[in-house]
Image (cartoon, rainbow over all chains, first blue to last red; front, top):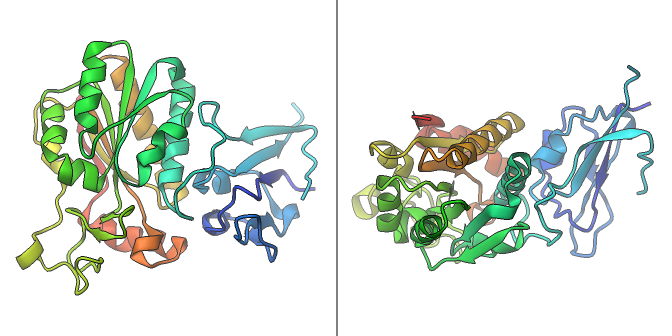
Length: 74
Length: 252
């Protein structure tokens, strides 16, 4: 199971691609669908590879990304 | 796509002092990253109820819409002067003057330099993207030599238009400023450095130490006619050669 997961606000995304370039695990890609503003938004193409590092969310100029990480048993 | 986030820890989300308004910036513009960093810093320091943002004229003219705190929209270039007035009238307030390069380094040169020279206890964030973004990409004082803009179609010729101005270095020669630094946002490491610098600048203001200036090298994918990823590369390879990163003054 993936260690992390990102939730992308599709309608807030402007399809700039900075998150896709920033992801060290190459999880994200442009969707073939468009959002209501007409942008090809980013989505998790390979969700199983996500480690929850939040690099995508840090680079997102529209703050459209939330990042969740798996709880580690203490 | 619905994602199951039950039993997971949220490690990153929208800062509390940021509104839900969609930004008016172009795709890939670094203004958005900076807005998030500022809101996060306001959250971390717990100063949302006493922060006043001064919005400039330029791409960031709607800056008063992004934060859940008070704001004033100043005349072109006069943000540092308005910030001075607000801070002197009520020194308990935390005043942020958010300005672009056309605003801070061209039209507001006098106000910017004198606010710094008086050592006003304010924080200035100076966004340097080397063009006048909002009006269509005209030459700014910070435009690089040879850079094509709508008013320098053959590239900036220093014999005719002068050289790009390094404003932070100018401010750093003064005695009053406590913190002058230049940061960038082209990769995650730089973003983390910029977060630290902005937090330091706000902390100095909270502690009453004096004037701090954080210059941030930004991209303008629209007016540079580049993709956001190529624009980031351009900052890494070209812009940082003309505008070297790092702290110039830290008297905190």
